[in-house]
Amino acid sequence: MPSKAEERLRFETFVVGAGNRAAVLAVTSVAEHVGRSDSPLVITGSIGTGKTHLLRALRHFVAGRFPGRPHLVLDPLTLEAIAASPAGRADLLQQAQRAFLITLDDLSLIEGKSAANRLLARVLDAGELSQIVLTADRPVQQLTGLGASVLSRLAAGVEVAMDPPDLQLRAALVRAAAIEYGATLTDAAMDEIARFAITDVRQLFGYVRRLVTSQRFQVMVEPTRRTEHLERASEGFEDLLVFADPEKIVWDWPEMSARLVEDLD
Image (cartoon, rainbow, N blue to C red; front, side, top):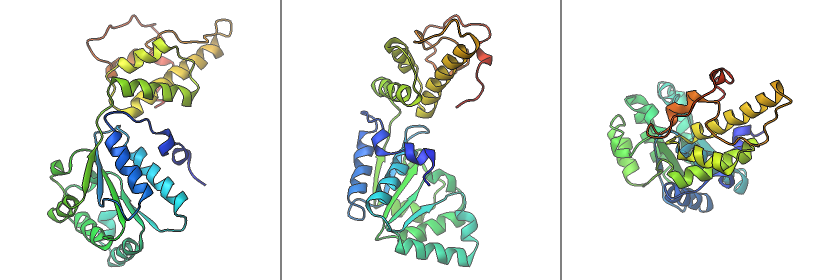
């Protein structure tokens, strides 16, 4: 049974903007033409730009459109251990040869691991006829801890970058988060959140979720003072100022608000 994350992280729920449009087009092209598109494809971008969302959306789409076709998900955290086992190496290479799609999330996790790099290079060779899609937290040429063999194979493919969300995309993301979490935020509140210089989409969604939790908390403890619409996004969460542009206005915060919700995102 698909996990909640797998159900949510689909192409239909991905919010497209100027900074990620090229990557979305590249991945959806791969989804529509697996094996006949650019390979290997490397999606690069800083933490929280949506690389994992795109990769999981690709897996979900391909599994639905091409049922029964083998898909190899490489776990960068286990490649070093597999490399130390002759049987493990042989099995992985056989899977790569049969795979319709091969994916790996976060190449940086194998930087400096020589055995994992050698094994990945062999997997890329074995899966030459497969569709290969990988992600990295920065451009490939900056992944100096990768082996020369891996870098050479990646250089033969295509690299697309995902930029941190700009103001317009942040506004669209806030509205998507409000819908997902059932938030009753005013347009002014959502615009205020979007103005915060939050470049990690997870943090942006987490902010909205905290606000939703705050509304529910108020309803539970003060039923006679229900808040149907939160007028100011900054109301009640001084700890979130660390994500805000330091040149923005610093609000006067309620004294107890920092204790309302702890680590919900």
